Image (cartoon, rainbow, N blue to C red; front, side, top):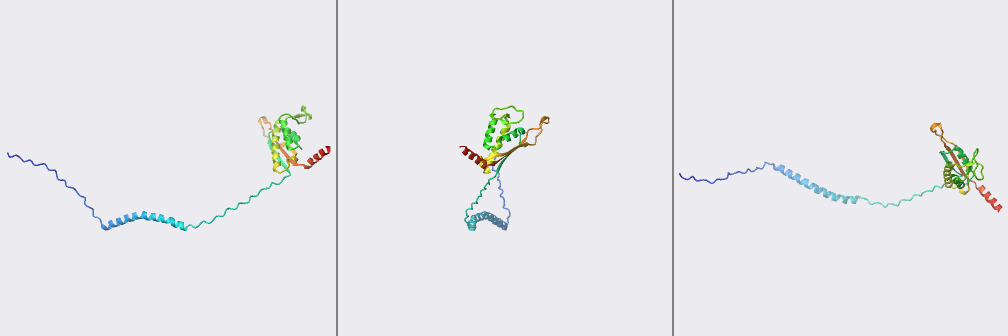
Length: 224
């Protein structure tokens, strides 16, 4: 038998499929290209306009006028007029009315500084305030007296306030005297058991008395 001739194996021929271009209208293609060009040109035109605008603004800005310095307003000084008297009020103080009455008579017709010194001695229990009634005698020139320490402390605060009012009213401190000192009941709140608390109103007034000072000086000179 004749030998069968073997043919070499050949690869299968593969055909490449090429995509065919779609039919496009030339007119539409031109329109699309023009639109793309306009879009690209728009940002460039904006940049150019932004660069030109500040130059125009600088030309339009008017020159600022020179501002004149503001004139200083004249401050008027308020002159405090001299007053005839000075007043100090103590309202609803938690002290006894009886003690405050005796303290008022104790400081009346005295200088403010002298009255403060005397009350400080009362607080230290070195000087007694004259009282009336069945009260034991104390050392010194007085017959009967006590040491109202709490009330004396409140009176010292009032006298310091009175002294400040005298100075603000442009009164001479050395010539002033306490010519009025009075104590009266205030609204008294009730405590347990129906007992009324201690509340007192106090009024102190001071005035200048230059005549008394001059007469005292004259008397001293005559004695000398």
